[in-house]
Image (cartoon, rainbow, N blue to C red):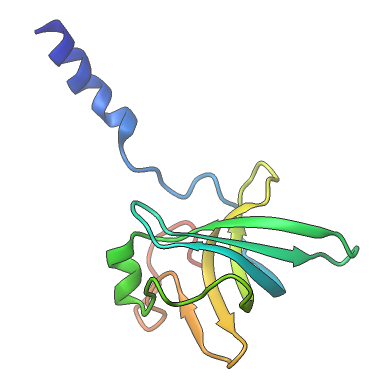
Length: 130
C-alpha cells in the first residue's frame, strides 16, 4: 500500500512539461540543413546544421508537438529528410544550449508549416509570438 501511495503521489513528477525552458522571442536560422527528422511521440524532433554569422557551424535540436497534433498542422513523417535546406524560427532554451521549440519552418519552395494553427486567435502559450 505504501509503494502504491508513493507512486500515485510521484505521478505529477512525470506530467508533461510546459514552455518555461524557452525564451519568449523567436530567432530565425536561414539556410539550415536538416540532419535528422524523427517523427515520434511524445515530441517529434528536427536536427539541423546552421552556419552562424561568425561562420561557425552549429547543430540545433528542435522539439515539435506530438505526431497527432502536428498531423493536423500539415506535418507527416515524410515532411522533410536529411539534406533538405530550410529556414526555421525557433524559441531557444534559456540556458544557452542549441536546443529550441520549433515555431515555423520554411522550405525552399516557400511553403511554411507552423507549430500551431496561425489562423486561430493567439493562444496564451508562452511560446506563441506573432
